[in-house]
Structures are given as structure tokens and as C-alpha cells.
Length: 600
Image (tube, rainbow, N blue to C red):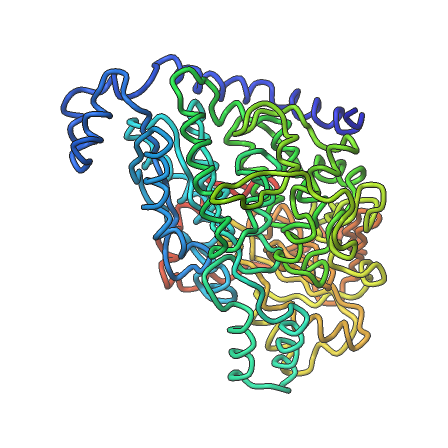
């Protein structure tokens, strides 16, 4: 039986979304009513679309009741290790689709940034906006209107949300996501963190740090920590948009190829003329909330408090941070994966992975099990794990008990009774905090503010020895409107060193800290941001701030009238180099973080 609180939250979301969902579905039904696309093309249209196909494919696509044509949208590049396998996968997938009884074409490509490369660099200011660019480029790829369905090749941070947002504009069609899998495990995450902190304190140099990082990130495949990329993969399984248990199979594992074949068969089945189920029927209030529940139950990336809101909006569904907070009260934390534990995603998968979590949540009535998925009605099959039999993927129930209770646990014995994220509110507005990675004794901090306009200012203060004290670092003008909301992940090692020395430290910012948010309490995504009139622009050094996720409080101990009467600090615009000048129109129109940080 579904938990009554989950039902209550779901009905609230549906009521709030009644008009916007109706308008979205009206667009979908209008496209659905047009029927299959190719018969409506002129001969010139169709000739252009199939000119590069083989003669056999041309005959199949030109026939009045011809085979389904599957459009592939790929975020391939070989600078991004997670996406490097998509180069070979394109030709393999086209072959598998033919074997399954259809034809496929590469519909278009999307850009794919690696946030690991741009962390702390100027390019990070384009990262969040790249999500909406990916949505636009997905729409451009699919708008040729010669396809009966789509396969989406993408894994990492902004890429999966962008692909999904773009595909939702073609929600009358079915879509299947195809993962490529994580790289094999390198050095342990604890060793990686240790060397990073040693570098910050000067104990090791750049050569030693690079050697350590290269042992962590060492081959094709997704990074193995549980950041935004791997949270994306979990979310897709929770929503029924990617094959069960397919997310965390390494690129070179023979099972990976078998899963690709199964994805092709699934896609061709969904695109059959007698099927009329599209992405819009799968992305509903229930499936969106399933994605949020998975985030809470696994301690996933804080970036998804932005992405899930933006994805939902593209489907006419209005989700708020309060919905996340209310869900967190009933959703237990069932996974400990770095940075909220020592295990990486390979160990998580070996311990039962996402299928184990889905099975436990379904059994506890904490997921919507009756949603439409790529495998048909019902989420139950997504509680199964794939394995290889011959050259085929087969699915089976995971072990009754978790293989490693230090990594995953059942709903009756969770790591903590509530989810891994908290909503904080106060005079500055609202913010989110990833609590699952922060020890309980470090979560609440009350200390004077030290204000910085960017992360480089704080790093200079650290190097100058000015931060050997209790403090709350306030880093502002880092929101979408100010500079595109870059992640501030490079602050984590220095703050971690100070915490280890016994100082009470916390971070408050209108920027992001990423899926790699660590052991220091960080109230992030403060909305409204400084550049949009947020009171965070009026904080001064020495103001006492209390960060308290247990009470849901972000308090500034300054009289509200005094705070409002202060003049706001005005940030000096930075020279817009490295392509940032091209994105001014997006900075000027973007919504607040709590509304999805989107230009749509």
C-alpha cells in the first residue's frame, strides 16, 4: 500500500499542475493526432531524409507502412570519459535496431561538457546553461519529424536532464536512454580525498596530486563516485526510462553489449504502429516524484533539486523544494556511496544497486509502482538485476538481503530514517543541503560570517592563514543570473582541512556545490540569489549565521529591518572571456534556482 504522505504530496503536485499539465498534454495530443510522420512528408522531404541510407533502408523507409525509423541523439565526445564509448556504440546500436526489425538514423548530436574538467575554471560558468542548450539541440535533431521514436545517448551532469527536457517536447514519441557504464574502480575515494587535502596544506605538490587524480579517473566510463552523473542514471531507472540495473555495468563487460541489444529490442517494440505510448505518458507527476524519492533514498546529487524541477516543468508538472523536504520526512536513506560513504558505484552495483533500492522502496509503499515505463505498466521489473546468459541479458530478483549492509540497507533498517537532503529557510530565502555526507555532529553551525564575492577570494584568505577560526563562508553572486551558477567544488578540500582541525565551518552560497558535496555543511542554491535582489547581498563580515538542517533553518542573527535597510553589495562584472559573452542572453532571462534555473 502506498504511504499516505506520498499520496498526499502527489495529489498536491497534481492539483498545482492541473492547468500546466493540461496545456502540455494538449500539445502532445495534437502531434499524436497527426499520425505517423513519414506518410505526411512530401517526396522531396523524404528523399532528403533518406538520401544517405542504403538501398534496402530506402525501400523500407519509403514504403507506405514501412518499418519504424528510430532517431538517435548522441552526446558523444571523446574528451568526456563517460561518453567516449558512444562512438562505437552508435554503429552497434544501429545494427541491433535492424536486427530488432526497424531502421535507425543518427538524428543529431548535442554538446557535452565535463564538469570535472571545468571545475574552478571559467568554463564552469557555462555548465548549467549547457543543459538548456542540450534540450534545444535535442529538439533540433528530432524536429526533422521522420522518426517513430528516439534513443538518447547521454550520462553526465547536465546532459541527461537536457536530453530529457528536449525529448519531452516530442512526448508523443517513445524514447529509451542508453547508458555506457562507469569506469572500473581506481584508487579509493578516501585516498583521493587525503591527497587533495595534503595538496591544500602543502604536504604534496602538483605532480603527486595529478598522479593521484589520474589513478582515480583512468579509463573510458563514468567517474565512479556518486555525483550528478551517476545520480542521473539512478533517476532514469527510478522513472522507468532506462533498462533495469543497466546503469552501472562497466563499458567492457560483455553484459554491456547484451544490454544494448535489449535496449534496441525495447525501443523497436515501443515504436510499433499499434503502440501509442510516448514519453509524455511515462513522465508524470508520479514518475517525477519517483526520481526525487530515489535521490533522497540514495543521498544523490544536490544538482537534482534544480534539474528535477526543470524536467518536471517541461512536462507541465510543477514541483517545489518543499515537496522534496516533505518527501524527505518519510523516505529513509538506504545507500552509502561516496561522498556519503566509502563505496563507489561499482561496489554499490555489486551490493544490489538501484534495483535493490527500488525493490525496498516499493515494498515499503514509498514509490509509485503503477507508472508507465519503457517495459510497460508497472515499476516492479525495475527491481530486478541483469546478468548474462549466453549472449543475452536476463533479469532476476536481487538477493533478499543486501550483499553489503555497509553500502545498501533495507527499508526496515536504514542508515537514517529521513532522506539525504534538507531544505533550509530563513531571512535569506531558501537553500538546500546534502546532509547524508555530513556527520551529525558537524551539521549545525553557528558562527560569524566571512563574506567573499567568489571562491578565489576565499582560497586566497585560506592561503594567507586568515581562516583558522570558526566561521560561515558566505560566497555570493554565484547564482544563475550572476554568472551561470558554477559549482564551487574546489572549496571542499580547504574547508575539510579546517573542519578536521576542530573549527566549526559551514558554507552559505547562491552557487552550487555539485554531486560531490562532502563532509562540510553547505547551504547552497540560496534563492533569491544576490544578483536578483536576494538579501545574501547584504550580509557583512561578523554577522552571526546559524545553519541548522535538523530544524530546517538558515538564520541570520541581524534584525530584519536592519538587514533590509543596508545597501546591497554590488558585484563588479568580470570580463566575459572563454565564450561566456555568448551566454549573456541566458543570464538575463534565467529563472531562479528553486524554479529550475532554466531559460524556458
